[in-house]
Image (cartoon, rainbow, N blue to C red):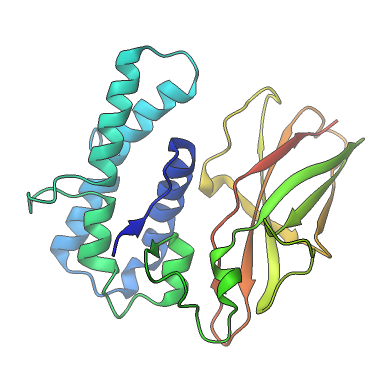
Length: 245
């Protein structure tokens, strides 16, 4: 069964960013060997290697000022970082690392797998105990509805669901916020720039800003937190934004 990783480059970049942050958060409890930790460093930290090369090549293409060669370099970097060479044990990639050290590791909880964004084809319909499987699979979506002086109102809902209720088994929908300046910036902030700002109420999120924040761009993203003795979370939504005026 295949590991489902987003197809679009934009979604893949958000996935890998969250994945690296969350693995760094949890890996100390996974019983990883010294070799596994060295492989992780090679994959995500070493200058000029897998993650670094992807970030460099994607940034060029994402800027909008690129050539055909830049597209080729970006595609090559993504394949190397995402898939690698399955026939070369000395190689590594996101998929190889997941299969080697995470997917069948009993010390990696279902909640942690959800938090790092891993979905396995054929296993999507196996929700955590007490949680509605539809809510595990479905991501939260958000959009800016109103942008008035120092005030923004966002709609936060589940795609394909008419009701604005949180959903079965959902404890809360958490909202995270980051800023960019100037407001003309179109590239979302890095995943670790967002901080938890509050929770959606009745399918909406109201945000009041203060004098001096005008002309900043506010970036939001959301995720579902599920009920249970142990906290588990769904995947983050795609970011949405609005210029503070």
